[in-house]
Image (cartoon, rainbow, N blue to C red; front, side, top):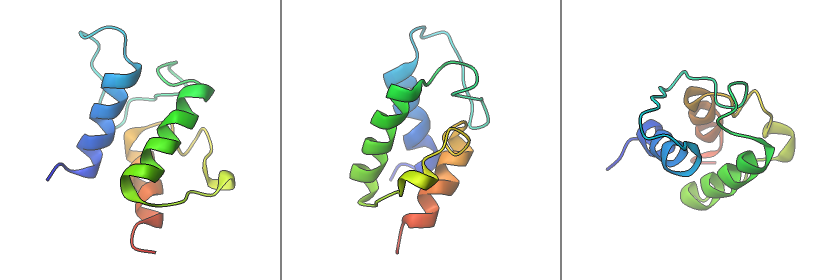
Length: 82
């Protein structure tokens, strides 16, 4: 089974990167570097909620929480198994 980190990283790469040569890591700033904008953040939130069968409160869906894959994984882990 695909690791949560890799699943989210691959989703971001496939959905939001224009150039196949661009390399991002688990710590690459996604929002502050312009890879993910506010509209993309909403679609990423919907993907996470559907994929992991969780509900992330709007107050927790902040740009800081979505700025790196590691931050996103930490956020998702707060709601898995609740």
